[in-house]
Length: 126
Picture 1 (cartoon, rainbow, N blue to C red):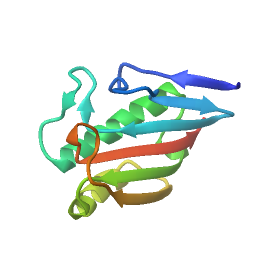
Picture 2: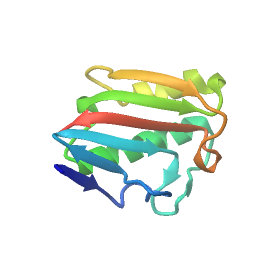
Picture 3: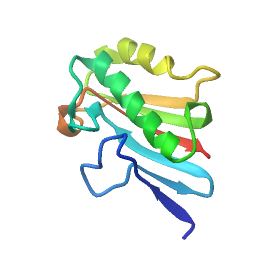
């Protein structure tokens, strides 16, 4: 197989049987990130706004380890524990995309890992 596992200590360690990201044929498949601080593996202080910022910082660290960045993201999926948080998450999320915005879907779910308020995954290219 033509794939490479991506792992960085600048993003939270996987809390299950998965990798932070996998590259296959110059495409980066990033696992969902939640608002954990990499050093402590605890949630960032604050609410959904702060968790979303931490999620995006975690995704950025994984993308950078894969020699990619937000300008190369093709698609994101946002999972929300509460759809009432949509506007707050949308504002923080949007601030990370300067040149264009990728394809995206946002879904409400019953619960997220560790009872996170938001989880975001993405697909990018190298």
